[in-house]
Length: 215
Image 1 (cartoon, rainbow, N blue to C red):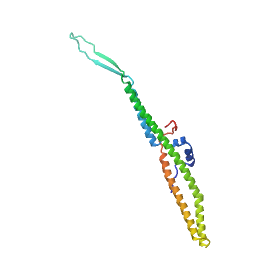
Image 2: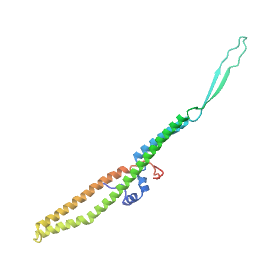
Image 3: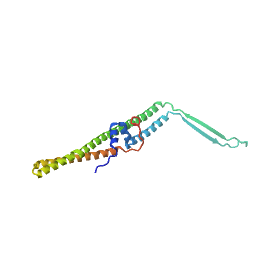
Image 4: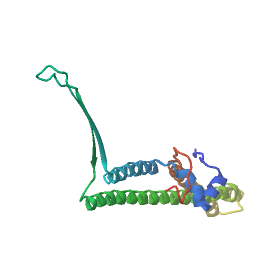
């Protein structure tokens, strides 16, 4: 029993010939999504590092109750409002280094994500090409080679039984038929392996993005 393909032959052909088409199927791969989340987290770190450049404003208020003076006269209570303005001084070099380090980490992770996307695209295209070839070979075996070998084996056996052929010819024809069946089985096994790889590559959880800009 051979597993069914998750894609049509037309889709496999399109993927094998077009990197953008291949990326449409792997853009939501869990490995890419994980890297994307890490990029978002590091972007937040860059934003926080940049905030250290901004002046810090502060607002304070206080209320003070005052008793009557010594002559018994009322005295107004006190209410004060204060504004503070903290300007970072002599820290530009330290701030620059923090922002540059955070930005470098983001750039490195984006590069890693792009390389992973290209790796997935290459794997998908290679797998699609392999499946197309395997299916072509399987069709050749099923439509031509296996029927021919079976007919030849049957003909050689019939000839031997009618004393019109040798036993060795009948045996050789049977062996050739069995070898052809074994080779066809190998194609089926290789196809199962490729279908498993294909299914693992086609996991997707997000809308399609552009291959050049979305990675």
